[in-house]
Image 1 (cartoon, one colour):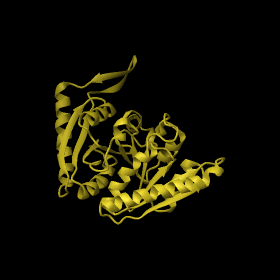
Image 2 (tube, rainbow, N blue to C red; image 1 turned 45 degrees about the horizontal axis):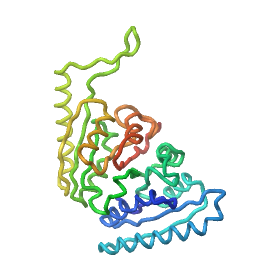
Image 3 (tube, rainbow, N blue to C red; image 1 turned 45 degrees about the vertical axis):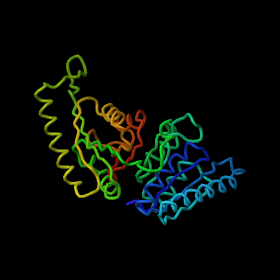
Length: 296
């Protein structure tokens, strides 16, 4: 599935946090790893230094992968372009299967998910993106077991299930624990004379919805059977994004997988409220898979 993995680097140690993830995936999928450095307009005087940096990192990554017995090609590309446009253009023209990028880049403080680079890449590319959080805990992350506990939030829609082929591919190669999670809303907004009110469901209705969710997750679990993964299902009640983030933190989840949008509606990739909240408030690496063929 991950024939070619693209890792954008900007010269910072934070951006290099993506490398262990690329190395682990490349090792099990025999993927080609392409490290791309982009020198922005107005910084052409640093172009040669940038090229040397990318080539050196490629050599280091190649040597690390060889030590674990994999024969993976690691190449480097240095371009003069705007960062977001260069990443998107290279991915589209070179059959990239996965982009791995870190939530903080050269600025160190400004989150890429809040800045123009990641926003443009997330909105405009059809390539799956693995977003690594630049948290203190990630600085200590080793190069093994980075995908040993995967959270798969689902909402019962076909769109939400777009991530499942990726989960299957990962668990065919890795002995991961996979938690299928569905969050049941405790109520809904309804239009009233006074405006928009939130009305809670009766307890009996909530229990019925929980049972329906559990039955659905068990069916999905059976579809993922036959891999190295250990499957289990979990149903929570509450705000969807909040419960996903909370569960990921409590269960020490190493990867959350999510599609661009689900039952909540067909919108631009990161403009859906659930994905938006998880992108901005989550603490766990996030695999985002865009639903192709559906316009916002």
